[in-house]
Image (cartoon, rainbow, N blue to C red; front, side):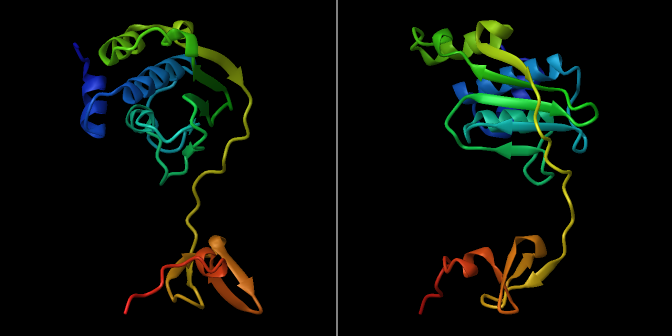
Length: 179
């Protein structure tokens, strides 16, 4: 399969070319084109993936969205569906893989070729949507958990009788020390 520089970069980032990566490449390219935007440098583009597949790596690489910056959200619902939005004007588009586009193609290479060479509605259901954009990433100070003594973001704590706990300690779901 002949690969352009973007595909080669995504493959290098991910580690191999597979159908999931190809879906992410195609979805990201289409969404960025529809939104008339480029790769995010900061948090100007938001992506929401409805799975935790290889496609998410392509989205990170091509759209410039990351979990760390808070402009990549992963809802692991097992669906090849992706929403992309621009912060400046709130425009958003949702793409979902069309089941019927691949149901009769069982060869891995042919599936990847189709997704990478197809345009728009042939492989994706596409619709403009309105979404509530997540807030931009915030730097939050850490405090010490009363139980495990580890630092935890202040916004991720629970307070009981004046004692501050990280969520795992609060829920009593933490790793017991061995020995």
